[in-house]
Image (cartoon, rainbow, N blue to C red; front, side):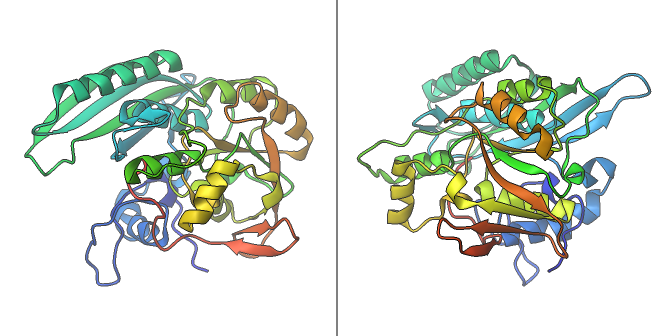
Length: 355
């Protein structure tokens, strides 16, 4: 297995690189082709210490005695713009706030950049902006700067939103994949797969017996409770594009360990499971926007579970796996009947345009 360069996870890009040395336009992220683009284009050009941490954001030291800031950015191209449980505005705020939270940082300030397609109804923009404002207030952050650009009709698919965020790292902790150690326990904050399936159902006009609503939510309250409980938190990762499988693969590769997961411990609601079975999708690879994993020492697992569960959306947190030493990094999944298989990156993305 080829190990990716150390800063690979710091970028998420929807343009995979083909074997013909040209960029093929494709939506989504989290698959092998996206990783190839990151490894061969972005990583060699931008390599630096902050990127080498391979985290959801950069932890930046301002100077001696001045503490740390976390900095992250993300672009949002979800289709449709409005979906059960959220919209592109709420998604933009929560997505960026959550990336800061995964660095152990209290989210403070956001920027917002809007790419508007000519002909976009003003009322649509007004709804999105109002949703962003509401989500920002709920998350305790301020949108302090921004930009707006307009592109020709047919060139922007309605509306794209870019957000960047700055947070304050208040505790002297090293939350990053490099901190993961054999013997650590993998915790999951709730059920999986709801966001991606909610988007697909809305986009395709599918009606299931039990409606599926996105899990889009701010994760900072649960992370704050986790940090405050005294647990030694080694790594945090939200389960966005590529879902639980891709997030754990990225961590395993960065830490050079095996993450051994238990399928029976991972909750998938019946509506999501049924929709995935009908559509031929694996819920372990379906995106979430309000779920995260925490990797902590075994001695701290019970306290961490209680702290996360006190604020988690989608049910109580669960232990879903353990970290093991490995000759090569990998993620294994033990099925409910005891069969073990290796989880690998998808060659592409199951669901395009979901965030």
